[in-house]
Length: 614
Ligand code: ADP
Figure 1 (cartoon, rainbow, N blue to C red):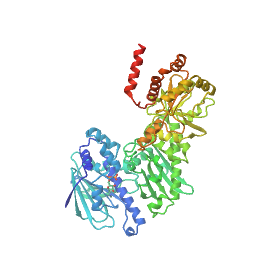
Figure 2: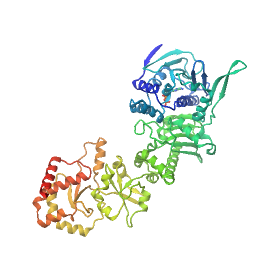
Figure 3: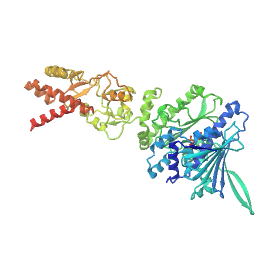
Figure 4: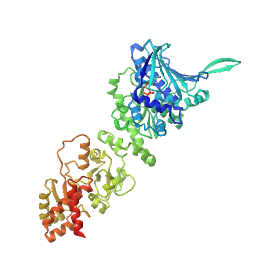
């Protein structure tokens, strides 16, 4: 017999399970059945594709046994089973990134942490919510030795050699005091019907019945084993869709939406996709788990193929079941398979279309979705070419003209007469953007400007370039202004000396000093040459690790109608221009959310001005 230490994270997780205040403990059975079903799926695939396993008896079933005397509940399967190494790896460490981030989120507050269990199925370990001791007896298909894994929680577990007839896994839970409800036949039936009715393998319940004083065993199938996704839509109730989602996703919440499609054209296949209500824990991890299971003619092939949907739809959960693929297609070949890439395309289109419908028909629900997954959808702008317009129709933006979010479609519909472009401004904070001097002329004319304050916007939005026939224009770019040429010329002449002097004084910091007609109230503003990355973009690039970018100088635009310049010209006080130039530049920077170079010097200038004004 050998003892092993759990990985620290597992001990933490077990500790939480044992002291869990989570009320919905019954989900442990769903998790065990879902594992058994996965194990049957894996073996099925091997028997059909690997010569070594061709001879093996594949009789898929899951058995639940109640022993009232010993107070045990046993779940066994005839699936792939686990070797000693498998047991150590799977039930001694946390391999899955999702579970890892779950553990990282633990706070130590039993109440809060228990609530987390509800948001996130924690697999096998959840059985410790109801069991004081667990035995896992397993024999891997194709091997001769069986192994018994035993644990009472804590920090260690044992593994010893054991006897077991066929391959597969048998998990015995020694129930805790107070958890006797899980020895009741009606309770087990109800749980299985609720969560596992439509997994595709039969689940049997073995109980003892007394007839005429004699105890007898009774075995009965207690689920439909229908592979839900293969049933016609009309035969599936909303409740069944929701419960099936919970078995495949480890999520305890209802899904927000599901999309069930049967395609019968040149390629025959079935897809059942779900959009969750909450973000999966690993949504922003590079090593996120795919949420899509691939089946060929009901035989499970893989659940780690991230190519079945584009990355920006990685929050989608569900099943793709294809008729026209050979079962023995290797996983490498799968990646380049033409049929699969066609299914991917059709599925992408379908999902985007359904989301668009949701937006049109139930905006409130859509908003809920968008708040959680909108950022991820935006990633698609960089990669989605074929359904770009469909994707763009799903995006929502803040705006200078309204309180609620607006989409491109509405923006365009409500454009001003003669307007041919979609205007936007990018920055950290919508409230600040709304007050930017850059919007002054737009506000005066009543032109709508979209306020982009998502972190990803600086990278993503300039990539949109165009929505339908309307180009997108950043309002802080030099090419946005429909300049009033004659007015500019006149102002240039009047302020000629101011411009020359300011340019000389600020030459280290700005590329140019120009007059503009875009300002109505503010004296000056910073803009960027249309070829240059703007401030938000520069920050984003820095965050991404591009530290040695050449410094990009902005252009300072000044408002010729502003009293400051009027007075300087009138009184010919060009000697005071030094303080004015530097202060205006600092103020323009501040209004863009940039840092100023010398805050102490800036403050001194302001104090002097205050003194003078008093
Ligand atoms: P998950 O099922 O989400 O991966 P679990 O903690 O429930 O996480 O299980 C960890 C791993 O243990 C599984 O991925 C699987 O490899 C293995 N496992 C669990 N139950 C069984 C079983 N009945 N038969 C074979 N392997 C199993």
